[in-house]
Image (cartoon, rainbow, N blue to C red; front, side, top):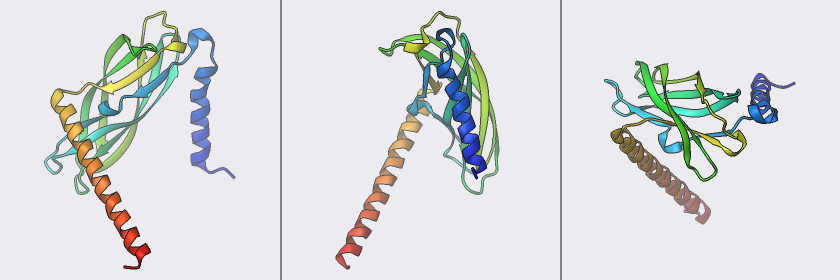
Length: 182
């Protein structure tokens, strides 16, 4: 017997794969979330370094529009139950095979998340008036961040990588000690 999660995962994959089996004029382009522009730092009274993150995107296509689904998450300190209502600016860009931007549109995603951790899915329609050959185009999605927010993301990423490296080093040293009988 298939469990519910596997069943609904299968349905989601099946629904999204319908894009690739449609005629040329209704073909769904490849799309990706820009990893450096996938989170926005936020602060509350209890959490000075929280974040809202776009964890995943999914899309369904029509002639000249794409319905995007955003899986968002909130990360606050464990004791912080703040409710965050925020309009998050983001962009959707159409790029060709050489990564030339052919079209870019700005949108706003309205989120309401409650701490310390919350995951929600939001949907938005993005229209492009064009005669693009979607088979050769890609859609890139990213949050429209200020230079300060981008700098905070870069610093947080470096700190996370350092913590992961330290943790891996500690685990490796523990294995070495265990194997050497110390």
